Length: 239
Ligand SMILES: [Zn+2]
Image 1 (tube, rainbow, N blue to C red):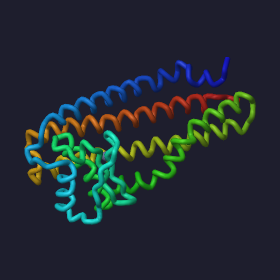
Image 2 (image 1 turned 120 degrees about the vertical axis):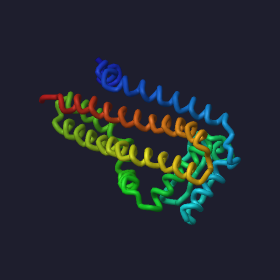
Image 3 (image 1 turned 90 degrees about the vertical axis):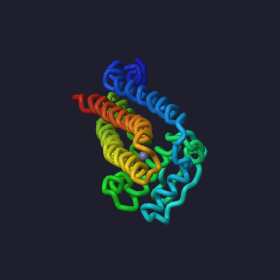
Image 4 (image 1 turned 60 degrees about the horizontal axis):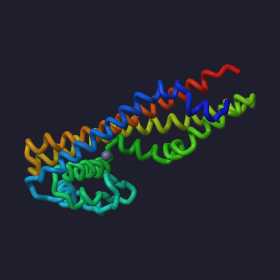
C-alpha cells in the first residue's frame, strides 16, 4: 500500500475531523446568508462602513489608526503592526447593516489594541510561531511517521516536534476566540450607544457577527480534532 495514501484515505481521519469539517462548511454557509440578509437592510444612520468606523475611532480618541479599502471579499481586518483598518469594498463603501457591523467589529480590534487588551497581545505574540507551525507541522509529522515506519528512530522525534508545532496553531486558535467574541461585543455596544444603529437594527447586526464567530469556533474545533488525529498516529506507535 502506498504510504501516503494511508494518511489521506485513512477512515480514522474522517472519524476525527469529518464532523468538524461539516460544522465549518455549515458555519461558512451561515455567515454568507446572514451577510446577504443584513446587506439588504440600509442602515438608518446612512453611514458607510468607513464613515462609521471613523466615527467610532473618534469617539474613542484613537487618532493613529487609518482606514483603507482592500480589494478582497470579506478580507476585512485590522493590522496592529501598521495600525491600519482594511475594509473590503462592500464594507468600505456599503451603507448596509452588514457593512456597519463588520466595520465596527474591525474597529473593535483597534480598540483592543489601543487599550492593550490581554488576549490580543497574547494572540499577536503567538503569530510568528503559529505561522511557522501552520506551514511545517503536518509535513514534519508525516515525514516523521514515514521515517519511523521505515524503522528510523529519529522519525518519531521529528513527528513529536511537528505535533508540538501544531499545538501552537491550536493555542493560537483558542486565544483567538475571546479576541473575536470581544471585538463583536464591543462593536454592537458602540454602534448602539452612539446611535449608529437602532435596537431593531442591532438584532440584524448581531446575526452577522455571531455567524462570523461560529466560523472561528468551527476552525478551532477542526484544529483540535486534526491535532488529536495526528497525536493518535504519532503516540499510538509502539516501537
Ligand atoms: Zn475579528
